[in-house]
Length: 134
Ligand SMILES: Nc1ncnc2c1ncn2[C@@H]1O[C@H](COP(=O)(O)OP(=O)(O)O)[C@@H](O)[C@H]1O
Ligand SMILES: [Mg+2]
Image (tube, rainbow, N blue to C red):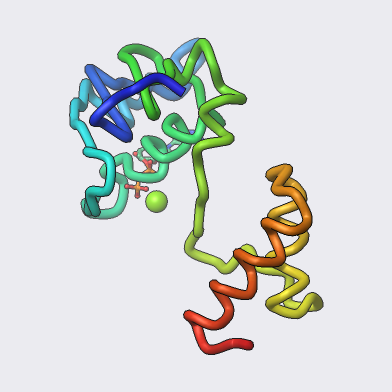
């Protein structure tokens, strides 16, 4: 991870859908913003403004038509896997597994991120205590 004061830097980010056989839809039109490390950043807009498309590009699931995205100093286009490792997403619909306990959800996710057993058990206990679930 590169040293940076910015968690996210977005410059000239643009996304066009379609175009070959249909009229292209300009979903995101050259947006630029920075989010500092530790900053809470609200990203609001009416339906169709391009929020979901922007999140898709920030999470490397959608390819930008133009512009650049940097996450913790890493270029998202050149280092999509390293960028994914820096991200945690809570979507509109919960992505917890209802059939697993809170403890097992944390163990499973921590294993996906390669957190060693002792560390994941310590962190999970801390988190569940903080959220009064233990
Ligand atoms: N997969 C897609 N194909 C074509 N057009 C899309 C697609 N996804 C979104 N759009 C269009 O892009 C624009 C932005 O949509 P979206 O990013 O979903 O906005 P928001 O999340 O802010 O409501 C809208 O005009 C929407 O109809
Ligand atoms: Mg949306």
